[in-house]
Length: 158
Image (cartoon, rainbow, N blue to C red):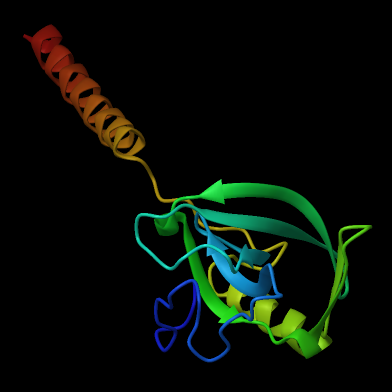
């Protein structure tokens, strides 16, 4: 999903470590293979064995995101792509609504478009082995019937 220049960052990027008064920080993160706006608990120590508390937000409209789920995940299921500075997001905790600046929404969409085609662009489905075998079998069967019909004609002429 992310570009090759994006590396697997720890859950607490060194660029902006959370302060003691912050319980969560916002980030763009890949959660179980899908890109989401998330809030990750700043109280969870960075470790490959420690479960991570994550709030997941759904993109609703333009720059509006709505909190849909709070879950605890294994660190292998969460990969922070980019931590979002507090100045770029406004969060109304009482309504569960987050407002992200347009530039970050555009960035998120670009990251998502790399892995999913735009609406209306159909993916070409490859033939399965079974259907390829079926086509080959039908061709061979028609050739066999053709040959057996010619053989039958020759036998009748004798």
